[in-house]
Length: 460
Image (cartoon, rainbow, N blue to C red; front, side):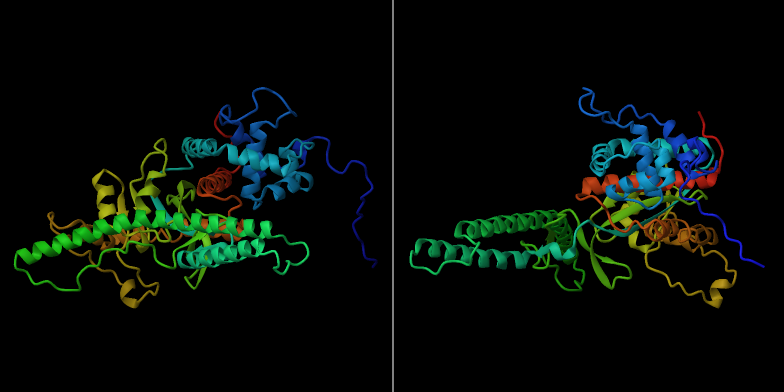
């Protein structure tokens, strides 16, 4: 029996149907995103009101273009521009004939940070109206995402001082060489004024880098100084009461930054952070997210921090949840977020019940863990807050609630980084990184809303 092969005809003039709506199946995500964006109020997006220059692209088209491309793993403006030529769904967004230049895409993205945040809120409100989002419990976590800068472009406080001394000596030598008429000339193509200017520019940048390090350190030093003063006062109080003083005497914070403190020339706002399992370091930002743990997996709050650890990020994560969406009843976070003072302040101000263990638990499940055990006796009403918070996690209800954390927020980060491939920011500087993270979260939410709602029509 002869082999039968399908005919591949590349010479037919009309390859796609004449109606663009027939290019893609009815339930395709691009239709959902277009409908969702059409329901948003985009009048506040920045436009050239004078009407000068070329015709402007509609804000709804540009926003849809960014959201769809971010939701499908295209993040750089150049890759988005390229997709307008070969990706059928992206061509459909742009009407088949428009191909925004990468510079236009980048300018639109960086000029509308405030409105991305507004759209983020409106999409969450839309999800609530559709019944897809029922804010009750949220899971909070953070992940390190690379900055658009190499860690090799960083300089330490000590190294900067050494390089300044070395360059200043070279400038003196070059000036002396310029004043000496009998000195040996430089290689062809080099000039003394250019070499002196190059070194002076480098010195200025190094001094600016040291100034940034000193400014950052001074902020932390003041916090450390307050802790030191408190410890000294408590020690003196115990001594006055005749109590035994144990432990070493507290030391005041140094007046100068540590030698290893660094700043990056390419993206000064980014930091060197431990990444992965902690076996290597990256020039990165700490991206935080609060994820709905009631089944939608939507990101209800997000922010960027330059802190390498999460100890101070519990309150900012809850504050990043828009007021229009409401405050959750409970919040789950791992031991890296445990901060008794911050937790007590949150709950004392009427915030959600917090489930944050004081120490990291073992992932190993023992036989004793499988056996039903009675809840421990609750602490007395006048017991300190840490005792009440710890008891909450030891009850059967607390264990059951906390167990959902690992399969709500962690999969969201896993999909964003592994499936979509968002492992590095395209923009530089914390304000722009904030807006890009918000765009990632907005795109993720519409992707999730399409998954949860299916082909249901959006509310008018």
